[in-house]
Image (cartoon, helix red, strand yellow):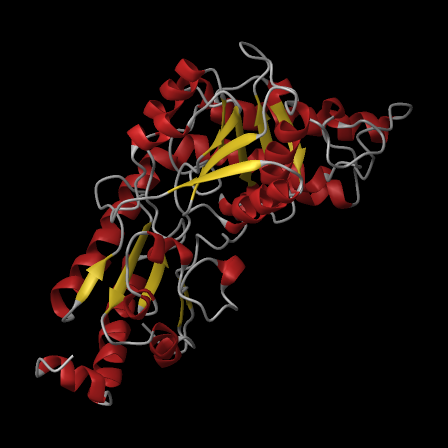
Amino acid sequence: MKKQQRIYLDYNATTPCDPRVVDAMLPYFYEMAGNAASRSHPFGWEAEEAVSNARNQIAKLIDAEEREIVFTSGATEGNNLALKGVFEMYRRKGNHIITVETEHKAVLDTCIQIEKRGGEVTYLKVDKDGLINLEELKSAIKDTTILVSIMWANNETGVMQPMEEIGRICEEKGVLFFSDATQAVGKITTHPKELGIHLMAFTAHKMYGPKGVGALFVNRKRPRVKLTSQIDGGGHEEGMRSGTLNVPGIVGFGKAAEIAQAEMEEEEIRLSELRDKLEKALVNEVEECMVNGSTKYRMSQVTNLSFRHVDSEGLLMTFNQNIAVSTGSACTSASMDPSHVLTAMGLEDDLAKSSIRFSLGRFTTEEEIDFTIEKVIAGVQQLRALSPVWEMFKEGLV
């Protein structure tokens, strides 16, 4: 491994476009550049057919109907549309929403806006593994509850919530169930109808498709979910999301879904093995290195590790010319505060600030993992050798 070679291990932030996806998209930038809503000429017909085909590919991936796929600009918009759309549409029934403290900021910040509009939001706590208590969820549901919003897999730790059990509770209580499934779709089987999920947001760029295009699954039967649109003008996407469709992006999204459906089972096994190799080497060879979150209920491609008394930003500086990793969510990477996900799991600020997320993907190789192990160990040793706090810790003084 050449030291100047760059290694990408930040797939939870975004994934590179698969070359097969790019090839599928290219004709729709120039040769077939029509608007999918222009139905009076062949260019428009071609675009409409391409969108329909992509919608079918995405629907197949999640075992849904084509008309249940609403195209958006990404998961953040999908989260906003689901939460605000349900809140406004069902406000006569109630104004209470339940979510979790470890959700992505796209959900948490949207909930804050809903509270400003007169909504009531309950934020469930998690245990040290990052999992909710199902009894607490049951107890939180009341007559005014209209929606439960719980992410499928956490973006920082990969921890997966018990979706089937949550869906069963929501069905028993007669409330809608929404999931931000951004980190799960395209990587594991995600069939919302089987689990009682009524709305589900996801995006192309987390599954080797282009940035700037996503989708929201909206259940049409038993129950038929209705949403108040958040973008008006033209009535596109069954009236739920107006705006000229991003045809090249949607085509790429469809191709990414098709590839994922064919390859994700085998890829999940491969990535799990690479992740385990990385994790075991660091935990075994670095003193006071620990895994954050459940090691039983999590995605295969990610591990979140803390290195006691090692500042994660400082550790990144020892190898960030070679290896791209993250100290948390990409959407909050500019913040100096400790991860809200890790602190919600009970980690002290010092330990939370020593954490690094390693997320692997389709183009990760074993050679890259070996190099990463070497560089991280060297970086930790270098920083601890210079740290009086680590020396005091070893002497039992802190």
